[in-house]
Length: 365
Image (cartoon, one colour):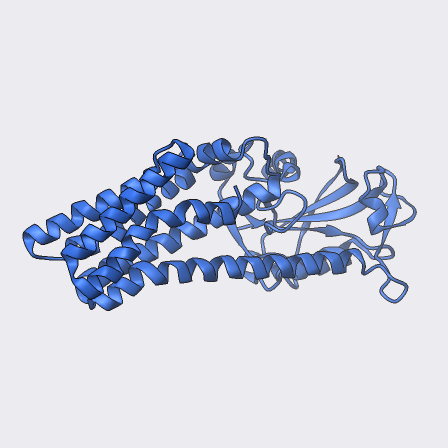
């Protein structure tokens, strides 16, 4: 179900509320309730006649509208009615919170029902989760604002906040995401077409398993799954407690997006010394300069995309970390207990999970 279809399904549920706001402005609360009730019943009747189903969202909206407005009339206080949008959004917040922060994925079950036959890859799944998390905080903030408006602001201000502002916020958010996606697409296209005679592609050394240089190859050729072995460096940064600093891969990455990875990782370019590459990559990714590092060895790492000879190091110069690159937007220290609890759960990159026991053995020796 795309965003347009989702809006088409949810929009009718808000019509009784908007009708009430308009009718109440001209003819008072009782008339507004009656008109909104008639509109809600008409919508449910139309859906039943056309699709032979009961629109539960319209039923919920109309039912809450009547119940809370009835309490308002009996108690001669319209604050209960004004809280109706907050109650509806609070239910949505609970659903999102349970899906995001508990083992029960309600949203996941709903998407399986409405998106049968459609599968999301790893990048799309991570992007979907991020959007749900942002929407949770957005809806929660709007819910609190509605409650504040119900008690402290005028009826006109409440009407705008509970109705129009809700759609403005969502329009702004999805508009921002749309522009961000277009910018990323342009960036990816530029990277794909940047290998011109005027912008030469990076050359990487081709090596054997002992690290002896056999020749050189273009970076793109090394990433075509042709098992061209080339050297890379990894740097682990630890603090005095033995906690390990990890960086989170951006969601836009094609390979293992959104997963936690080694603090520093990068290629050695052709003609570049190992230590030079280590210092360069450490600065580019986590702002680390003038640090000391101990070599822990090397190993071969093969994937469907590439073959790497990985030289891995450890450093304790943790106080010099300064994130300054768009490539790394988040990083933090993890205790060994935290890491081992999440191993195998899709939290870390497969390369880090392979290397973690090697690191643990090396630093405890």
